[in-house]
Image 1 (cartoon, rainbow, N blue to C red):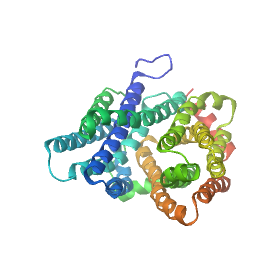
Image 2 (cartoon, helix red, strand yellow; image 1 turned 60 degrees about the vertical axis):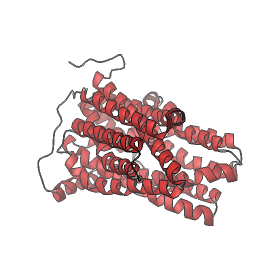
Image 3 (spheres, helix red, strand yellow; image 1 turned 90 degrees about the vertical axis):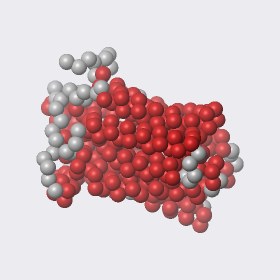
Image 4 (cartoon, rainbow, N blue to C red; image 1 turned 180 degrees about the vertical axis):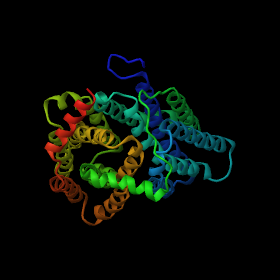
Length: 410
């Protein structure tokens, strides 16, 4: 019998949460450290952009092809190997930078390794969770995990800025390598409470087709993925326009920009604590639709306000409502997809979501200069609202699924 705390979560869940939180902080710290090393060496923002390109493009390619194979591998081993690979890459970067090797290849190497590993780590972690916690606590587990990762996203850059000031870039790279190693060790102690059904050995085409068949049989899951892709498209646009929005439209400073960027994850942490209690009073479909509409409305409001403090408040409120969609969406995938297909389905879902972000980044810069920042923000908000209206979530379907799961696992 696995030990369970007062929250109802087994010890293995807390190992996953701790490991992923340390990993997220390490990733944030490592990204900042790599960017700092590049800027110190080249003084070129283009070099930093090329680092992100080297991360993102291989990541999308791996995302497309790796999903079917994840169902044949032990997700815990995939996660541990991913963390150790990232730790080794950052350790290599630290050693090469400290030894004074010529060139910036160590920095680009870590970016490439991270891009190759991320598509393995995220689906593996999501497919492992249902085997660790009880089905009736899955939504709470996703909310707790999601909230802790957002908290790490706030702490990572803040801690990174302080450490880089104290230790310089190479020292921060060494700490990043240690963070990933610690994460791998914590995950190694995780144990599943229920056996995981692994997929049979098949050709890649057959496995990928089986994953796509799930989306055809479960149209709600496809609808959820498409809705998330619209949200990520808007996020991609905001990644490019946030700084000029703060400085040019709101006459703010870089410190204000930092507060605005921290507003959403801060709100998300608070919202993740409200998911379960509000889900007892309101239907899941109502909360998910409210989350989407609130997210779209936040972009429209940002286009209208002229106060930096109002903009920060809007971002906090948008963060509070965001988990109502994201947490329930993830739980639906985990409960409706068979375990031997979960890895490939989650991988395809992640591909659908992520492929729109670079498009948003590209269009954000293009439209921001030609049309203006405020019209683009308003357009992105309306796009999310229209997508939610055209792809409605069927309340009867969602609630029936919820009742079926409750009966099945009671």
